[in-house]
Image (cartoon, rainbow, N blue to C red; front, top):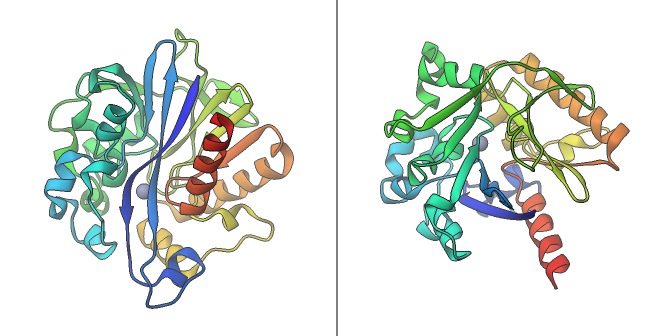
Length: 277
Ligand SMILES: [Zn+2]
């Protein structure tokens, strides 16, 4: 299996220091949408989809919160263009796995209408019938094409002490949804078994790599945004504690990454380039 680390959308909010923890207060920050493309013997698996083609044509559909975050909305950053850049077609993406359905994770769904879309049942319910306070966060335009949802509900598989759901039992690739609620009601991480240990894509369970350090820290702008936008703050913080514990106990066996940290993306892409050389 080959893993590509893709950036499927860049946001450039003001105040680099507040967002990235370095740079000037007047400099533009950099927030990425770190997605994974897995090349497997059973076809391509895309983990999260970032912003999609229609978002780049009409970024206003993303709403006022994203306008504040200043999305760059470049067609070349869409998962579709990058998949095509590797010489594949959209129809080669057989499976999509989603951490949750916020617009910066679901925008590419319409670009891959043939793919099965694997999702935790609680998140699917939260997005299809949102609570009043969650209505602004979910964007129906991203699923008006009626995706082939594959919902998963039962946490029957233990994974390093977390409840896991093995979602592709018939394929050769081991992929589990790891429920990590808090950011959204049904938010999950996604664990992938690689030839070199496990990779846990934590989605939006944390935003900055220093949140996994002991003691943890987070640039103030990101802390503010996470508190503003979480569906359940207590659960979010509890799950961050569990992730720190995972790093402390099993950091040798599991590598963690999240959706929006440019440092983690740059590091993963550099490691891939070095391994291919
Ligand atoms: Zn996000």
